[in-house]
Amino acid sequence: MTIKYVVKRGVFMDKKKFRLNKQHVISFIAGILVTAILCGIGILIAYEKGLFSNNDGMLGGAILQKYTIVTESDFDAKVLNSSLPELVYFVEEGEKYALYDGFFETMYDTWGRDVKIYYVNDMSRFYLMNLGLYSDGTPLYAIFDKGEVFEQKYLETNQYDIYAWVKDFMTEDTATPKPEPIVPVFYRMYPGTVRQAGFSDEYFNLGELSLLPYKYDHDYSYNCIGSRSLLKKDHEALYALIGDTYGSDTEQFSLPDLSSAVPNSDLYYQIFIAGEFPEYESDFDPITVGDIKYVPTEISYINNDLYIGQIILAKNIDDLDFRGILVPCDGRKLEKAYYTALYTLVGDEFGLTTSVYFYLPDLSSASPIEGAKYYIVATGIYPSRN
Image (cartoon, rainbow, N blue to C red; front, side, top):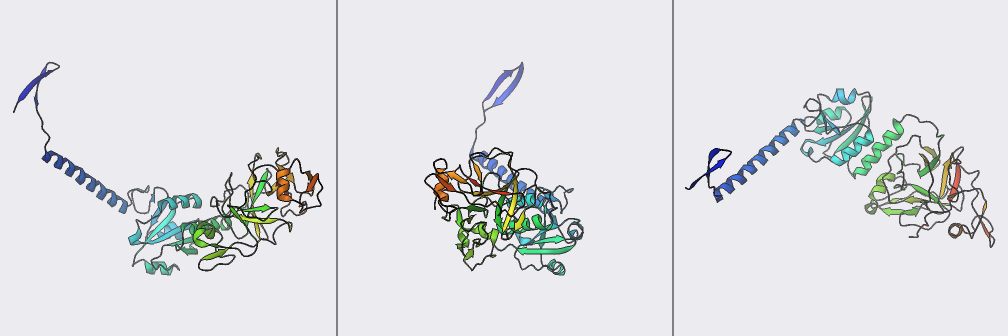
């Protein structure tokens, strides 16, 4: 072996030549694999023992602050004796790693606090039966209120179904009454049976209704005339929203027939078959009148990104600048030359036209909400045909 001496900062240091061989490579790789295996085992053990919780590392802590594991020993304290309604997910012991983490995060935002998880085994089935619950292996959700099972639902279809069910409970059964709006609002419309109706600030939502002076379909919305059916497999989210309320079979479900709910016989409701799943977040309570649910939506300005011909119910908007965009539906006449696009949609349905003028529908006495008025979008986006 050759030894070389080098001088570094006045100190003699010996430097041996090093040659990398196959034995060194195998030892290095083996060390990495053993380390990875030990780390994985440690993480699994910590997860089993609830060490990722924020409750002193004990089982029952809120893992990632999105859900809490409860057991038979603390079920009374954390669920039955809770002063608030509690949402509990019952799942088989062997399925504990088949959790929908993203879904629980959404449910956390919807429910307002962590969802409880109860792992079911053979010994705990009798305990659940005494609570009025029966588990056959299918994941089960249950809402507990004042120490009793308020409602339960099996996870048999999809996550939208559970989401809609929880929104249903939160927005109707436990909501605190909110004041009447005194600010400018648009009333977004939904079928009356869609209890969890809400809205996206800038876009139409799935299941939202649009009132129009024509009845041809769009790519994004269909007319609510007669018992129109859609395939469940093609419209899973919409089916989760409106369910079997208006009729269904094994493959199809029906849209609501709102032909008798329009404020004028020459107007038509369409339902959006695409869009954001509705999330009700509003400072005001929705109002249901007949077959339509009206959701007050505060607005601070009105721009021209609305669809021409769309009829909007609004309140307290007189101080907003909507000139040239919205026109009151009070039977007035408009110039064809100035509102050419609107005339192609409205036509002669609401009054005998001349070569110069056409008429708007008169809905001045048809408002379902006190103080609200109907307006038609006169300039904006021209709707495309399906």
